[in-house]
Image (cartoon, rainbow over all chains, first blue to last red):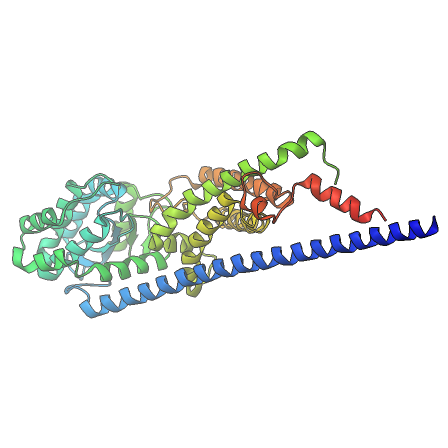
Length: 251
Length: 176
């Protein structure tokens, strides 16, 4: 009786120990799998980060190699008399519909101020709406090529791109169309074609876009008059506000 | 914790639904960010929370992590760890959006990829984003609490056990 009970207890104890060992083994195995998977994940994430940081550094190097386009003033394209008291800085993306709306609401007034010598404009190319065909970058690159070839043609090219703005999210205008508009704006085809097809200034456009973002701007158009951003952080200025700001700056 | 039997039976399926739901969210949120790294860099910078030196590494790592979490959640592998990291991410997003609102920033959160548009009225967006992320946080916490789910690699590999079985083990171990 006593022996049987003792034996049973021993058997139970052995079973218990075995179960405990199994549980420990299972826990060890789970920990091992978890650690292995976690390690793979960390390596994948680190690899992506390293590759992308390196590729970004390479882009900056390429941009430096091709150099900025000629005739760049304060990182943008100057239109008007450099001595005009009011400076309107426009950060625009050729693919941005709000920029098109801003241009149709204010373009004529801006041209009048420029013609009167009241204000000058610095157009800052920004490429933040690149879809699959990278139209934001391609159009800004084309504008840089035009500015590089002949600053006098820039305004007409700029206006043509807004008048003929392609639908957002589509494939954008093809390079051949950009070249046609550049010729229409008054530059010789040979002087811009290679830069447009090879996207010579794409790296420079990327750097200007970084600069735009690092200045704290988050959307286009961002309108700055004599160093002060107009509108609240989230709205574009009305023609009335723009007029008031330009007149105050021109005094 | 004592769980009613009906709930115990259904919880693994609910966990599967949460897993697949959150996994899908991370695909929808991670893929556009992953394929537009520069847009993501600008979105991260717009929050003005990450120092400039770390903006790029952070913006490159985040969508990669989101896609990894999507894979883990859809496969049901390391569910508890994935759910815990998901919950931590959601807390981070909620803090980021709430403080952007509090600091008067007018930004699009870029949660599902950068849009590059100016936001006319950011408050509606902030409220929507915060409610959505809070719901995701709740899901992630439920999954952290009870990670066992049907159709999961965890169950297949024996990494997790149904709550009932685990409780039986506990009772057996304690019954000397």
